Amino acid sequence: MIILVFYLLYITIFAAVIFNYNHPEVSSSYKEQHKVERFYGNEASQDRVILLEEKTFSGVTRINLMENAQESIDIAYYSIHKGYITDLIFGMILDAADRGVKVRILLDGIVHGLRFGLKDLKYALLNHPNIEVKFYEPFNPLLPWTWNNRLHDKIFVVDNKYALIGGRNIGNRYFVQEGEKNPTYDRDVLIINTDPKTKENSVLNQMEGYFNEVWDHPITKVPLDKLSTRQQRKATEATHQLKQKLENLKKTDTKLFNTYYDWVKMSLPTKKVTFIHNPIQRFNKEPWAWYDLTNLMKNSKKSLLIQSPYVIPTKPMRTYINSLQVPPEKTTILTNSMASTANVMAYSGHIKHINSMVNEGLNVWEYQGPDSIHAKTFIFDDRLSAIGAFNVDARSAYINTESMVVIDSVDFTTNLEKEMNQYFKKSLKVAKDQSYIEDPHVKPGKVSRVKSFGIKALSYITGLFQHLL
Image (tube, rainbow, N blue to C red; front, side):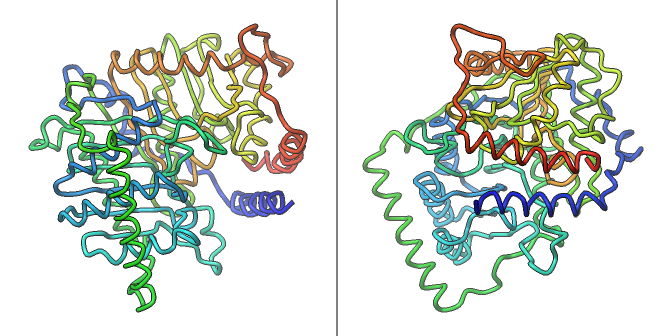
C-alpha cells in the first residue's frame, strides 16, 4: 500500500510538471551542427571498443581500471545501492585516491543512494583530499518543480584513456550473477583511446567535456561544505571499514585483482565513436538525444533493432519518427514483459502503447524473466549501434540528463547482435491481440495477482494524462 501511494504521488508530481511543459522542438542551430553524417567514419578510428555484457566481467573491468589508474577517475551515476559491489568499488576509489589519483564523483541529487546505511560512505568520500563529490539538482522540499530534473547518466572515465558507458547503476543486482532478489541484466561498452596524446580526435574528449559541463553547472552542488567533528569521526570509521573489507577481499577473491588485461588486443576496431547527450538545464530540454537517434532511424534503410526496459513513445516523441525508410516488418523491439519488469510504474505506461506498435507491423518481443533486462540499445542497418542510458520514454527525451555513444563498427555490431540473441531466446513475440505467439521453447513468465493489479490500476491513472504526453 505504501509503495502504491508513493507511485500515485510520483505520477501526480510528474503530471503537474508536464501540464505546464511545452515539449520544445530541437533548434535549427542544433540541427545544422548535428547532421547524421557525423556518425559515420571513412577510416579506422583511434577509439576501439569492447562489449561488456556479462555481469561479473563488467565489474572486474571497473576494478582493473581503478587499480591501474594513474591520474584521474571521473564517475557519473544515477544511483548507488548498498552491498558487496558498492563496498568493493568505493574501496578501490579510496585506494586510488590514496595513491594520488584525483577522483570526481557526480551523482543524481535525489536518487544517489548515499543516505541511511551509506551516509557514512558519503562522509568518507568528502573527507578525502583527493576526492570531490557533487550532486546534480539536490533535493529541495521547497522547490517541487525541480524534483523531476534528474541526472540519469552512467559514465566512468579513467586517465582520459578508458571510458565506460551503459545502463548499469552501482549495485549487486547489476554485477552479481546469482543470489540477488531483483537480478538485472544490463550492458556497457568499454572505449579505449589508443592515442591519448591526440585526445581531440577521441570520443573521450567529448565525454570529458560533457562531464565538466555538468560538474560546473550552477545546479550541481557540493552536498556538504564542511564536515562536523562527528561526521569526520564517522568518515574515519567508514574509511577504515572499507579499506579493511578491500584487504580481506584481496585475500579471498584473488581473481578480481592484479590481473593483466590487454584491452587493446581484446577490443574491436571502429570507424568512429560519437557521444550524444541531452541539454543540462532544468526542464524544457530540447530532445537532443532523441533527435539524433531518430535521425539515425530515418537514415536507416534495411533494419532497425531497439532494446529498452520499456517503450513509451508519447505523442511529442512520435513527431520525430516520420518518413522512416525501414519497413515495419524489419523493425524489432525487445523489452520486458509484465512478468520480468522491475519498474511497475513505467510498465503501466508501456502497456498503453503495445497494441499500436504491433498493429503498425513492428516486431515486439517481450523478455520472460524471471530476471529483468535494463539495457538501452539501438542498432541501425547492422552497422551503427548506440549504447547508453536513454530509455524510450518522455523522461529520457525531455526531462533527464541522458547520454549514449554511437559506434560505427560492423564488427562490434555483429558481436552485439550475437549477445542480444540470447535474450530473444528467452522472449516471446506479441500478437495483435496482445497475447503471445506460442513458442515450445519459451514459457510466459508468471505474474503475481498483486503485480498485475498494480500495473493495470496504474495504467488507468497514467491514461488520464496521456493527452499531456
